[in-house]
Structures are given as structure tokens and as C-alpha cells.
Amino acid sequence: MHTIPENLKNLYICTPAAPYNPDYLEKALERLKKLGFNPTLSKHAMDNNGNVSASIEDRVSDIHEGFTNPAYNMIMSSRGGWNSNELLPYLDYELIKSHPKPFIGFSDPTTLDVNLYQKSNVQTYYGSVMSWIYFDPDEANYDQMIEVLTDPNSFKGFYKEPLQDEHIFRHGTMSGTLTGGCIAILSSMIGTQYALQVPEGAILFLEDDDEPTGYLWQQKLMQMKQVGYFDKISGLVIGKILPTTKFIKGSELKDILNLAVGEYDFPVLLEADFGHAANPLAVPYGINYSLTV
Image (cartoon, rainbow, N blue to C red):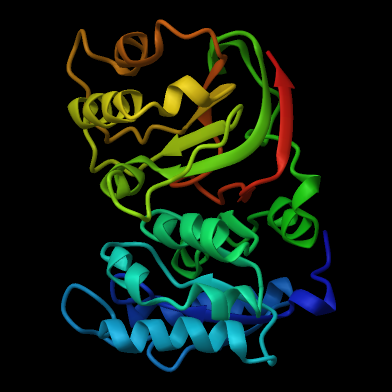
């Protein structure tokens, strides 16, 4: 088992989106400690203010505290949910840039993954949150997460097991920087100053929970096509589709991909092990990765 280095042990946990369920707290903290972290909850991490954990001012203050306080080495979102986009205009990106620390979160905190990386040059990770660690089985192996947090360039790919033929929608070579996140959240930022900026030749990774049905996947992929995301990338990786996600016969995911990216020649992979998967892989933003399939 990989050991967490001393410079990452002091983990600061904030709740930038929906409220955290207190029933999940004790066990989640216990597991983080078992992994070798020394977790500290932010001042407002356990607040409950309707749709969100706390006011915009309090959530922003918590995030700034995590970056500026030298007692903490790394910041984790306690959960996903909704409405972390409210914070984006109020974050002091220059302040954060002057106190860079790794940030990890997935789903709704895609907003922070993208903007802390783009605006503050912070190394962010599309990876597990505290609530997800609560739900993981006791024997869950976090070696990949710890290894990639220790060295983002150690990222070895999007699958826990060797790549299978059924994971390959289209063959080819992808080579470029990693970027992406939750497709619903990424599409909600398009047209704003906080939208994902896709570098030329990037590898775009996308996933979601089961809220977006097939027609929403189709809508959001077509939106990305229309703003030119697919014109720039060298590869597309789709995370695991949850079995409860509803697709209509004749408009399954592969049919939708044929419509959205059929005219391009970049490789496309399916059912990758990141995001809303059990014990998800951590994907580091901005590192270079290459794969031929």
C-alpha cells in the first residue's frame, strides 16, 4: 500500500456545494485517518442552508482558509451535489495562486477543479470526495489515488484493469493534456468566463451520475460540439455509465456518440473507472498523457 507523504497528510475538508449528511461523517473521517491523512473540517463544512451548505461568503471564506493557512497541505471537497458555481465570481484567484495546494473533488466541484487549475495554476484532481470514501467498501484500494496525489505525472490511465475491446469505441492515438469532468457541470459553465478552456490536442474526459438521461447526454455532447471542444481534442474518454441511467432504444450511448463525434477521427474510450464509479481513479488536470488503442 502506498504511504501518504508528510507534505500531503494534513487534509482540509470543505463543503462548497450541497450540505454534507452528518450520518456519513464519523466513518468517513475514520477511513481518511486509516489511509494516513490528518483530516480537519472547515468552519462551515457541516452547515446546512437549504440547497447549499452555507452562504456564499462562508463557503468562499472556507476555501480561502484552506489555501492560505499553512497548517493544511491539501484540500478535499466533502461531497458533490449542486451550486458550487455560485462561488466562482467571489474566489480570490490571485490569493489562491500565491498559496498553491492540491485540490481534489468530483461531480459538482468540477467548477473548482477547472477554475482553480485555469485561473490559479493549482494542481487539481478529478477524484474522490469524503462522502464517496464513506460509501467505498472497507477493503477499497486507494493506492492509485495516493500515488497520483504524490506525483500527478504517475497517472497510468483511466482503467483499473487492462483495457478491453469493449471499452474502445474508436481506435487511434490520443496524446495531450488531461481536462474534463462532469458533463452536466461543464456544459452549465459554457458561455461564462468560467467555462472549460480546452487546450489544443487535449484528452477530454467526461462522466456523470444517472441524472442526465440519454437525451441529456446527447444535448450536452452536441453543445460541446457546437462550441468547438471536439475540434481541438486528440481523444475522448467517457466514464462508467451507471446502470440506472435511462437510454431510449435507438438512442443508446453509442448512437449518440456516432451523432456527436462520428465525423472526427480521434479515439474514443468508454466505461472508464473515474467519477461516479466505486472507488474512482483520481485524474490530474493538465498533465500530459498518451495512449494508442
